Length: 560
Image (cartoon, rainbow, N blue to C red):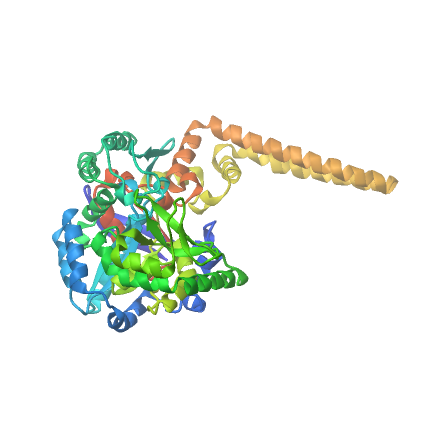
């Protein structure tokens, strides 16, 4: 499916061309993911409320509204406070007011609090939720987009880098405060003065454009000393999506945890049943030829414990007496004791990955969730958790997925004789294709020609030897394989050297691969949005929004 979309840019009108690339043609996709996006309903044993199309989501609204229990006024008061604090625009505050109304549902998505927003898929997730809300509103339903900032997570390594592509490769900007408490929730980690060095490093990798100054000011206003990873991330996300009314929620907020306390309590009480069900579901996935995204051991517990020193520690069940212990400290409690602590101090707890979706959907009247391939796999494991906690299972839709190919890289690929899908091949395959097609087709053609001639002569010799004595022919076959091996090695070395000697072709290939498949991954999994905001300003956000087609479950390749 190919599309053309007219957009506005700083230089005037822009026409984008969009083509769909089935995920089955992209290496590294899991069988579960491919089967799910091909036919979600066929996997209803894992996804009980799966829908064949996003247009069917509206059919869930009545059930979702009837099952929502949380006080909307209390929830929206917290959201108004949080979003006002990070500089939310009027559109967001209007959406919070809309959420106060009993007939309004929420479309959720979320991501970890990556520095400078993390990889591009964070942006694509948010815009997918916004587009779904627009679809529901066009049909007369009240809906709002909600972005769950996963500030409770405690893996700083996963959120501390922002990467951009240069002509020489990938440039990583790392930011870690000089002092922080290892193991604490990243949302609480304070931003210190060294953030200025990180921002300077990021912009040293980007070209100076008409948008660079405003972009730098925008980032510096969000990421500054005195803020923390959570407030900086939510502030920048809020400003990037100001016109779309995206509601941000920070789950570390004490009032959010108090609202979530009932579902925490039920999860503690039913924790044994939950773990048993998750383990059974995981075994079934494996038996059906799929993978389990999370390994859940018998001692797994669905909540984390936040200790006195501020660390987020996993809880484990002691098989000897059924008590629950916190990793790395002396804390130990029975399930009734945990429930009592939770009722008094809900801030002591945060949900693990198997429980988090249920907590989100308990707090919000969630009609659907947008996630990536890994989250789709999580949902296959945890739908029984919804059942055990007596909650309606929320359908997960795959977020829109994009590769952006700017005009320069389209020209590079054309001059190299490559298509985008060719780039999924090995380095040797790419070198061979470029050398044979563009750089030195004459010399490249010698290898198959000579190999065929040698093979023909070797075959003639083998027949002659066999006529004399079969054992001579058998020994000769080994030598024949060695000759072929050395020819192939010579061909590979020629292609490598010849490509490097053509500096223009080599430079174009390196720049294209760094931009389109950085480190062998889809662009959206590595590159930070600042690369495109620096080149195109906030127009880029609008272009991506216009490029979303929720009826297309393929990877969408944008050319402009």
